[in-house]
Length: 391
Image (tube, helix red, strand yellow):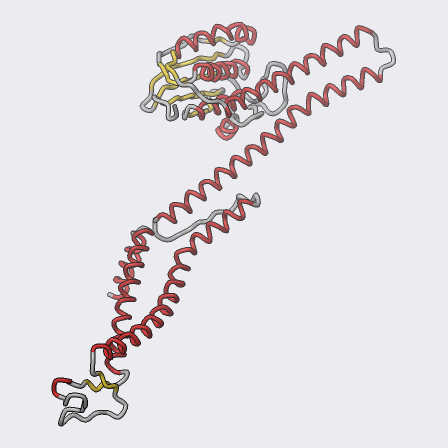
């Protein structure tokens, strides 16, 4: 029975919020203090000191005396008036107040320590995070109350910051690699040309053309980075979007590139409308179709489908291509990651297309999911919510 009662008490404490527990603590403290005060006053008045109460009505005027038959203690305090009683009560109350202050301070110190202990743990975690360490968590246990919610929210914030900083570090490293490689290539070509004493005008012209091509690739990479930054920092203006019209326009723009790559670009299937930023949505669909063409095989095909789901509007782009795993597909949304590796070849893209699409989806509170096809290639779902979460 005692064990069962203790278990029920523990479960009850875990169900109470911090506000309820503080309220009960304060009410209990005040009630307990009142009880202690009454007990101290009563004990003092009852036992310290002895009293000799004189009934003035039974005593001779001007000469108070002890009634017959009543023995007066030698150390008794004689109370002959209301003033004497109040003075004695004041002394008892002051003593009780002093004792109560000491007890209340001790109990308050203990209770306050128990209350702020979780806050101290959160503060320690915040102090470590301020130094740049984000790999720790508060991990607060106990009842599901306001402090526990604060701790869980802080842990989620730390996890989000850790992922963001890791992504930024990878982005900086990848961007440095992407920009350094063509610069190093250009330097090598120029050094080779300068080291050749027999270089003629035709050779220098060929060098200039190759340098121009590398420079063009650098400009495209920088433009893609600017597009990515604009999506991060832009303020979206939502309006109705006719997705069939946009996808038809994108297919028309990329028809020549698909024909040159030997990829059959199928017509759009399905109809759907969405609410969002038309410019960004068009850019996202264009990037998806361009990736479906460039990361394909000669004689392959790419298709765009529009549909309405229970949560929103979906644009589905499928293509044929090499077999890849789910882990590789999930990594393709990171900047500068390509399915065939990091080597940059002509017209293979810069590894920023899907990163831009993922950012556009996140800016619309939508989702981007990539699923490898069993026969090769990818199926990409770009989904927008029915109504925007931010206006």
